[in-house]
Length: 259
Ligand SMILES: Nc1ncnc2c1ncn2[C@@H]1O[C@H](COP(=O)(O)OP(=O)(O)OP(=O)(O)O)[C@@H](O)[C@H]1O
Ligand SMILES: [Mg+2]
Image (tube, rainbow, N blue to C red; front, side):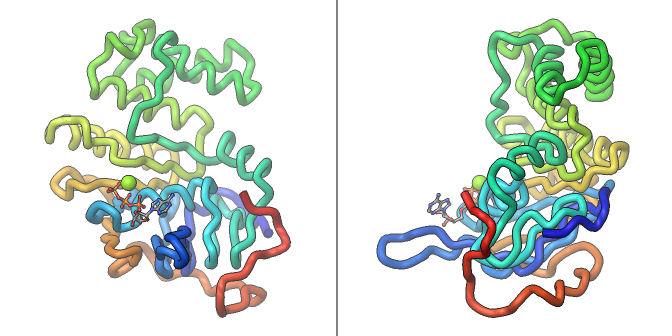
């Protein structure tokens, strides 16, 4: 595993992922290559079962692919069926990756401000620094006046904005957003995508945003269409040359532990 610097965005190179399926294997990702440069948003658009959430899980380091390379912020997190150890990947998710799940997963008993300061505390930030950062982010997503409200008193769109702000507390290199608009009407869905796009430009994160609704994607930088585990016409600039040490051929487990 190598480090090649920070703010390199997200690189997926010939990623293959299968799941057990009775006696056989189901191919969820079939040689997916994609580059998301820092400060840009790529939307991932495809029908149900096409592999969108699987791709996000791989980029999030939650799932180790059978083959191919995954590079997050210049750090190679998976290659040739091996991966960084689970503890290192968990640390990476805490410090370098922001994840917005489809279900907001806000804690009911915490205010909007506390949802964010909790994350900052977990990262070891001092309380005053944590609160300043949290208030800044809430203001950025237009919720300065809602800081003391709990999730059940916020609208669906407001909750989604808290959810997005929370994913940015750790100033991630890579922001992964799963179906942020599915519970919202068209106009609010479009606003959420626009917010993600502008925050991405402002923070320099590399953002991959899953959507089923092409009509909300007017502000993104690129759209990758996925079907049957394959990305059709990969967006973004040309892929960097594959590492000389990466052997081609069938999937194999590397020496690093996988989980
Ligand atoms: N844990 C799992 N075990 C076995 N098969 C799985 C698992 N997760 C997903 N699959 C299968 O992998 C394929 C891709 O699933 P995935 O969840 O990535 O699709 P998706 O594009 O996110 O779909 P949706 O739009 O419905 O959320 C599907 O055929 C699905 O049934
Ligand atoms: Mg999904």
